Image (cartoon, rainbow, N blue to C red):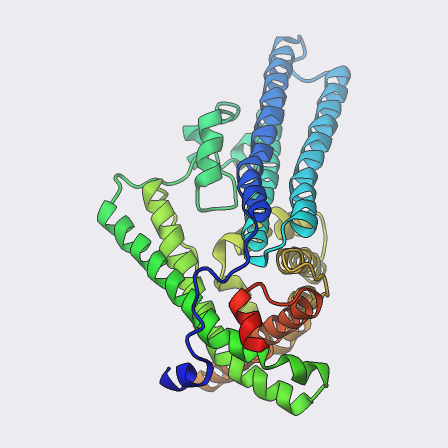
Length: 416
């Protein structure tokens, strides 16, 4: 620490970041507008629920006791209209925010927070539509045994009684991406627990800010000329130097988000499912890491993309390909759009996980005992800490500097 301060001086400066009023105003505006797409999904489902009630009543009142051909056509027409309405809504939710962030919000931090919020709401909106589609199908086809497939927990709030504004608002704030009419709930709120988690969030946020400004920024800045001259050995040296601080910042961010923030939010909402991550640091392969480090996202893609594709006859390899393709696109949107540099590094970094997973998967099945676990875990940490985050950070930082220069007034002064 002393060596760093002697070499670079104190680089921490609250007023040095070049935030424009337009960035702040647009960020706040989008923060309040993005959830409106969830409200639109609720209105679509409210209309669909009213239609479903009427359809079921007509079927029950019919002499045959089952749906007529005309009623089946009405079912199908309603399904198509609702599906297209949801598709338009969720597409607009992501496209509109992405356009504003890319063309109107200059600062990458504000853009990243806005885009992250938009992607989370986009995923929630799609889950709300998918789940209610399945519940509506079970509601309209009781004779075919569809209702038996509905989880027992859902009977506490059966369809269409779950289509309420309060139910939607709870899902909006709940620390999950997968919609359910009912979630396990705790008995009371432990406010001391919440206060501790909030303190952790504040402390870790300050730590990440200091570490980024004082340690990561000089390494990134001093790497620019090495990248420009394609000095491979110097670039590798900078990657190794950057790997330590980037890992520390990432671990702090992971703890602040998954352990502190999500648990605090879950406690306030009395949300019972606190399985936000497993012991990913002990991963024996890259596949094990992706299954354990971010349980909300993993559960989402398994529930709404992977398993439905398997159920429709897709192979596990093809389904995994689609899952990682969608995830890679979202990663590029999350990183490339706020930095105004869609260079494909985040996309490739995510998409190339597929061959790496295939290479390390045999280690999960090999009977090497403790040795196999150590080998797999070593491969994971080397790829994760050296050739993963540091390389991506270096590429996007270089692209930003080449296009705009620094977002920090002080950094520009120090560089000159």
